[in-house]
Length: 311
Ligand code: GFB
Image (cartoon, rainbow, N blue to C red):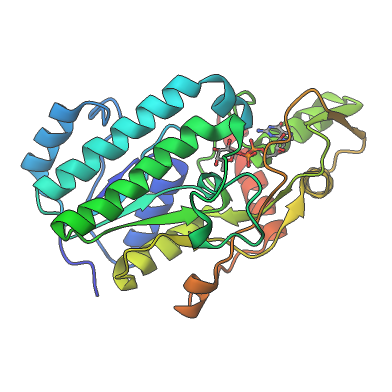
């Protein structure tokens, strides 16, 4: 199926939304609608309905969300729950009301149980307790995917949800309190090198395993699934490669050229011990990511440094 008509990318300035816009543009799709949060507060039902009534999008990529790393998830718990539930509810309900042809909702791999068997298959959803540091965010994302599932069941809407693994790429957040580990470590190692510091502090004990995907690969997967996926089930999107936080720190240290030592702050939480997605269903459709981790990190590091020099 080709995407013909108006495409609304909710969250088009964020890391995921902007990558989806780049991918749509590459494919020659021109009718792309985006609204900043100042122009349209997606937590406000009346504003969201008025927007859908005025613009009548045919397709929706729901990539708008309040997101952050382990610290922000754990501290701003009420906001992560409230904002994300409101965004998902308002947009999905309006998409039903204004007859959107197809909607893709972005979930997250943290919706799976903390101790899910690995690699994590889609059917492990709701089979055990969640990781406590991100339970509010995960509950909101589970509400979103359940909205897709049940608007489909009750009203026949072509809505579905994608579960991406941990992401990185252009337009990431480098604020240390709210960042995810990869951009946080790029900043920490870069500042340590340029200021001549002797140590970089890495949170937790370095043992957790994570899977990192470049957001351009995710965006390709999202557009591919919007065009080709017609099932009700959620679908995982990852690389199949995992790395420990310690090895990630060593890799970023090498790329940045920092020569001091790494210190682990075990007062900070590790979070989920392991989070590797089983992507057999996506692979069976013929989709494979293309950007290897080291190359991806080198590219984002280059971008980070050039953005600093433009400030
Ligand atoms: O990226 P991150 O915050 O996300 O942390 P999660 C991953 C791991 O890196 C954890 C460690 O074990 C952190 O303790 N880490 C080490 C650091 N140094 C740092 C640092 O400087 N900053 C950060 N942020 N971490 C999030 C969830 O979990 O992943 C969200 O909270 C979301 O809900 C997202 O799903 C993808 O993988 O632990």
